[in-house]
Image (tube, rainbow, N blue to C red; front, side, top):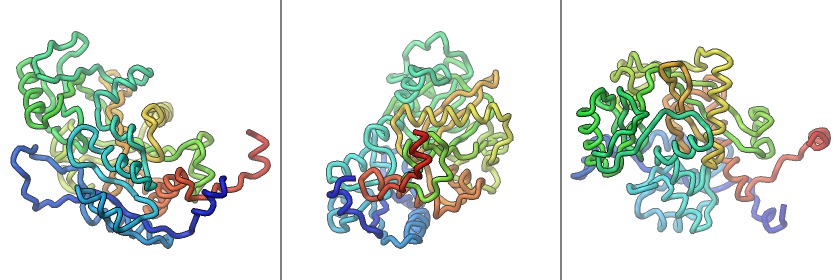
Length: 372
């Protein structure tokens, strides 16, 4: 490690947690969708993150990721930012904060600009996966709504916004069974969300989500190197989402996602999922490959659903997965295998910080070096 980098290393940091805060009582401006801001975080999540980071001696501050962010960063002068900001609209909004931090040369956690720009665009993500031989359902993007339907797309179909997360724009009307319903729903999405509609074959099978943490050199920087496989990745237990009991049966909607884990109308959350070992291995490997193909860094969560023949099809990837304790899918997966919330958050922090020369690598044992 260069001497200039070593000189910057210190034990305790000032960490700015960057996020967009959800206010359930906030009056929405005219012209925004009914579920606008659904992927913003509650202040309680920020408090939990800060408490977890402070358990290892760090100082934290919360900065709202709004238009004042550049000035607030100058005032706070953090050593590193823990980024979960969703952005403030427009294409690739989740890339806005990483782009700003790179311009200001401030270290931050999680994926970088390009990955966060691509991953929110579900159509582009599917094109990349499809072209690299990962299994996705047949799909088509509708920009104006009257495009000719491709012959490989058969009813029933599923229609949703092409560039949103957290189930936004997804309800029982997302499943369409006729040409008339398709046109009406696509037009609704295009007009309401001011973006293309993604149309894909409806997948009637079981739904899973799989978290992935790490990268090739994770063992050198993690406080828990035993978590990581030889390739540097930790594959969280598979979480199954049973939508049959949810307020929107068969559909993992924004309304269903907003409910507490055990609340009436919420989906069933089963982790580890009861799946055949071969399917489990396949799901985890698909999640890692999906992560790698988008150049995701350190943490992500990939959603996969089975088609009518029981074959896994990748739905989407979340490179800014929710981190609300005992609620967010990734946190439920970590808890299921005995990983404490504090340890999960600190590993995301140190993996991110190591990319910026803020953490010294662990000494590799001589026998490990000999095997390389």
